[in-house]
Image 1 (cartoon, each protein chain N blue to C red):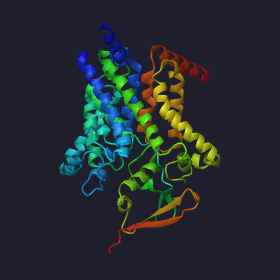
Image 2 (cartoon, rainbow over the protein chains, first blue to last red):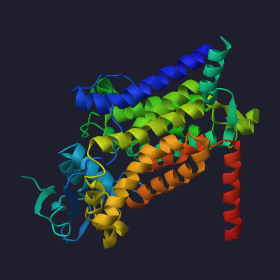
Image 3 (cartoon, each protein chain N blue to C red):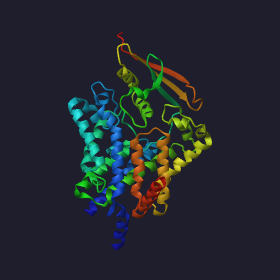
Length: 141
Length: 298
C-alpha cells in the first residue's frame, strides 16, 4: 500500500510538472505540445500574460435606444463576472452575438441592436476607435 | 539501507500520515461551492447551451462534443440534475469521493458538449481536484453529513490535501513562468489591463480611479504579481516564511477578484488551497487571529 501510494504521488507530480512544461517550454522552444491525455494537462496556466490592446465593449439597446450591458441579454447568471463572461463568450464563438440577439427578442415587433465599440487602450481608452452593430428583429423578410 | 529509507520517508512525509481535518474540509466546501456557482447557470438553463440548434464550442473532449447531441433532452436534463446533486453532495460532505466522481464526470461532459458560458482557466485545476478527490476520497471528517452520521474525524490522511496544494501552487507558479516568457515585468501588461474601459474585465471602481492607471502603479503591480506568482508557491513550503507568504498570497488573490471580473470558482480554488500548507501550530495561530478580530468587531 505504501509503495502504491508513493508511486501515485510521484506519477501525479511528474505528470503535473510535465503538463506545465508542455505548455510553456515545449510549446515555445520545441514548436509543439505532447497530448498528455488527462483533462487538467490539456491547457497551460495562462492568467493575463498577454493582454490585447484593442478590446471590444458590448452593449445593446432596444427601440428606446437606452444602452445596457450585453450580459443582461443572457438569462444565465454569471455571479460577480457577468460582463467578462459575455465578452469571453462573444470571443469564443463569432455567432454568439447573433444567437443571443435572436433569443432575446420578446415579440414580433421587437428589435435589438448590439453595439460593438472597439477601444485602442494605448491611444484612447475613453472613446472608441471603431464601432459596429449587430441588429436583429423578428420581422419576416 | 536505513539512510535511503529515511530520506524517502522524509521526502514523502507531506503525503503520508495524518493532518488536521479542517483545511481540507474548508477547501472541499469552497471548491464544490465554486463548482456549483460556475455550472448551475448552464445546467439549469439547459436549453440555451444544450438544446437542439444551440450554438456550441468545442474546448475539451472532442468525442463528447461530437456525440452528446444525440442524447435526448430528457436524459440530458436527468444528467444535469445528477451532476448538480453530485456537486451539492460535495458541498455538504456526503460521501465526497462518490460526489467527486459524479460531479467530475458530469461537469466534464457538459463542458465538453459546449464550452460557452463555462470556459475558464479555473477549470484546469478543477479537473485535477475532481480527479484527485475521486481517487483519494476524504475531506469530510468535520463540517459534513458524513461527520454527523458518525464518521467524525479531527484528523485526516494527508495525501489528498498535499496533492491538491501541489496542483494549485503549480498553477500559480507556472502562471508566473508564462508571464516571464511573455516579457513580464518589462512589458507593463498590468498597465494595459488597468487601462481597459468599463465593460471589459476590470471592475468599475478600478476604471473610476485614474491613479491606478499611471505607469508607476501599473509597473509596481506587474512586479508584485510576478513576485507573488513565482515566490509564494515556494515560500509557502518553507515553515519559516509560510505565514508571511500565506498573507501575501491571500491579499493577492483578494486583489484579483476585487479588481477583475473573474469567476468565483477561480477565487474559491486559489484562495482556499494555501490553508493546506499550514501545520497545526500555524492553524492555531490563524484561529487566534480570526477570533481576536471577531471579538474586536464585537
